Length: 135
Length: 132
Image (cartoon, rainbow over all chains, first blue to last red):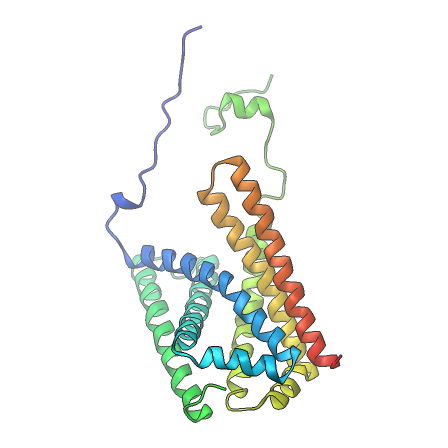
C-alpha cells in the first residue's frame, strides 16, 4: 500500500509574530507564576522559622534584611501582585468581556502599570510603617 | 466501523485507539479558575496581614499569626495556592516537555513538591496556633 501521509497545517510559533503587549503579559503571567512557585519555599521557610522560636526567626529576619534578601522580597511581592492582576484579567476574559482589540490592549497595559504601581505603594507604606526597618 | 465525519479532526490512528474525551477535559481548567477566584481576596488579606507585622517582635508576630481568624485565612491561602500552583506547573510541563519519561517524572515531582509545601505550611500555621 502506498504511503499516504496527510499534510496537516503547521502552526507558526512565537518568533514569527511581532511582539504585542498581550503576548508580553501572557509570557509574564507564566514567568511570574513559576517564580511564585519557587518562592513558596521561602514563604514556608519563613513560616517554619516563626513557628520554631525567636532565634530561628531572628536568623531569617536577618537574611531578609540583607540587600539580596530585600531584592528577593521586592521581586516576590511584584510577581505576586502582577500574577494576581493577570489572573483577574483572565477571569474578566472568562466572562467574554474585554476581548475587543482596544479592551485587550488596555487590560494588558493596566496589568503592568497596576502591578508596578501597587508594588511601589506597598513598599512605601511598608517602609513608613516599619520605620525604615523591614520587620 | 465508526462512520467518518469529514470535519472530524481525529486521525484514523486516534480513532482506532479510542482515546476520546473522558468527560473530564475541563476539570483542571475549572479548578485553576476556582482557586484563582478564591486567591484574589485571600491574597489581599495576606498582604494586609504581612504589612501589619512590620516592626513587631517575634512574640507579637506569633500572637497575630496564631490568632484564629488570621490562622484560618493563612490556611485557606496556602491550601488554595498549593492546588493552584500544582495545576499551573502541570500546564507548563505538559506544554513544553514531550519526552514521556521526563514528563511523568516532572509531573510526579510537581505533585510531591506542592503536597510538601501545603503540609509544611499547614503544620507551621497550626503549630503557631496551638503553641505546641
